[in-house]
Image (cartoon, rainbow, N blue to C red; front, side):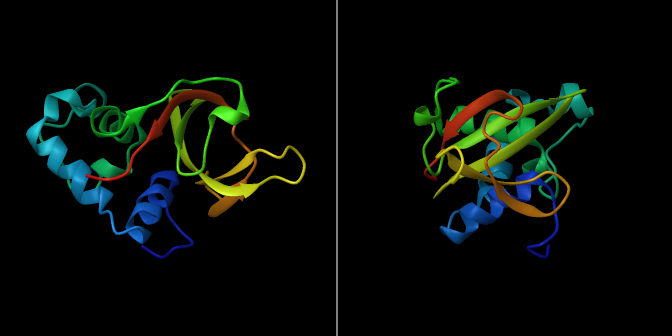
Length: 142
């Protein structure tokens, strides 16, 4: 998929690919072995993993990071969020979102910026506390 298109999860997948980590493969392999741990059966009524889409669903990434990474506290202190951390949000109406914290700070707030895509292409913005945070993770790879 071209770098200027996609959804929020694609930004996370691309970031890890740049580090030599194939998150798409890692998520799929974990789902094959542990499908019942993922929300697919309940939420999307799927009977088996689908390597083409499973890594593009925020709830699946949340489960994967809980299982294979580090789950960090959700706080209202910007200092608790570091570059490389992953954050998930509830945008309302059952819509979830994910972004990755990068090492550049906002000039206005001095918080670390988030790389995400919320439908207008990839962006780096100061949006950490713009929505309700539902997850805070750290993942270094297999």
